[in-house]
Length: 215
Image (cartoon, rainbow, N blue to C red; front, side, top):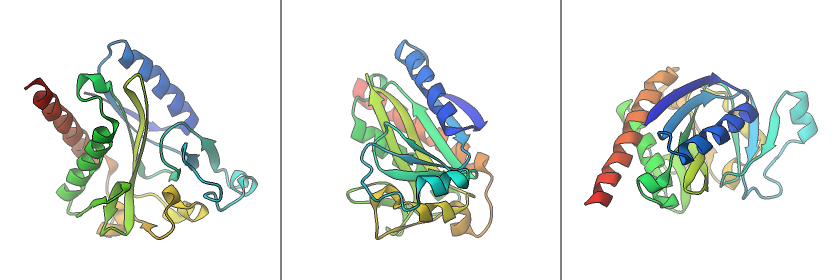
């Protein structure tokens, strides 16, 4: 798996680049995990319910917060600087053509990487993402898959300002909160510390599945 770092990039620009990358992966290019950060933006997935956006679009625009409707699964979420965003653009026919498996694999990679820096996390039955003590979401996950090529991915709250989440119902879930790596640890954490761990875990988990399929 190739790793690319796009730095701080507007969400719309990253979405365009993902689509170009997905086309290349479909035609045989290596699976690629992209890391980046985004300026303040709220994205609305395909399943977003009416009322998930708590602030008006005009008010958000006045605060320089973009609101973009996109084709990933899931509902409303936030991206802003200090959040580690990962876009695994993969051809699932090379590993396992199973969308639910891929979602669980991303979750597991994040869980293992967080464990390495001393944060215990896990899943919540019936909900996608990575959670702390079942009540605070630390990582949102939502993907799009076409021709078994994946786009979009995960957003791990690391050092980002969480106040923007007050303007949405995160992922449509009203009875749970959000948290970040720095809030759980009590200090800022370099994004590169987590990038390396997640990339290593994700590649290892996908490779082990390929071997199981071959056997």
